[in-house]
Length: 227
Image (cartoon, rainbow, N blue to C red; front, side, top):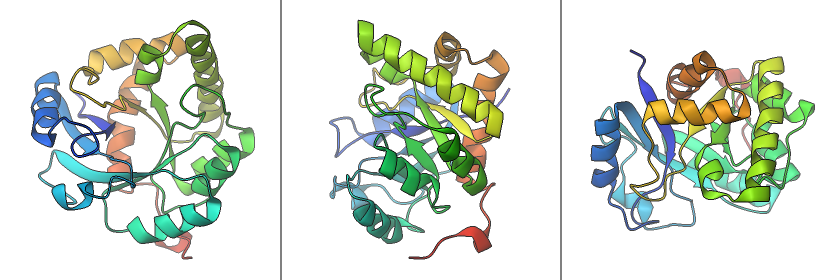
């Protein structure tokens, strides 16, 4: 059985849910590990969660900004201090800056919260070249309604085609904000089928790819951009 990982989970102090609660639920669902990726503007969270609590819980950060210059400054600040460095995407200039920087591990919300943005061939090629994983946030499907859901599913289908074409790393995440947002791996795999991901692809995006992201499998020291 594969080792499954959810690399986009939010907990206290960004939310009201203690890390221990997320740990127990994820463990019960059969995950081998989760990453707590509170947004970087949740300052109190930095001292609550160490870089690695155990071989199950990893500390990450999700950088949120509207400025490329601020993004670069924040990447430099957090790089090497967390197990997972994610960027909250959506805007084209933020997506491009994140995907061109090999210090970034994950581009979360690549098309924004409601599918208002988009990825291009050029951007996904940057992801493949720099080993930056593209996030498919499945809670975006669950939490959306009608036209928003249709738009999100369409964008995910387009992103999946690009990921397949350029062999960019892609992962499935819950973006859980509460214990009710966490989904068992089998549910995640079923949800991924809604935008055309095959079962084998979905299992890979929940196991080998996120494990490789944590191990920096696609990173090379010579490719790391120092600003």
